[in-house]
Image (cartoon, rainbow, N blue to C red; front, side):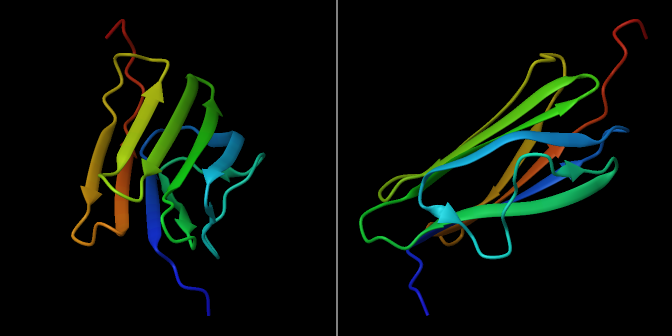
Length: 127
């Protein structure tokens, strides 16, 4: 069994009324966690949730990755970085600046962090 030094688990709650399609997903440092991979072409159904994450099994190295989603209302990108020393940085970006994306982080164990990202429904600017 491989020893894991740093791990980030991401739960994406798609509270929109549209599916999100993965346009790109890449681990920059570390590797996808077993059973928590996400790859190009996969979808996150409307009103559903999806879990994915990364980990590092190298002493002295953290983990970093990004996932880019597309929908009928635009793009949504998520980037996270958990360094060997320091706190998790998790940056969700949506091309609709009015959309309020919420990020809840559970870092009770700073080496094994869980993040809940909630993507709310798209608001019609004319309403």
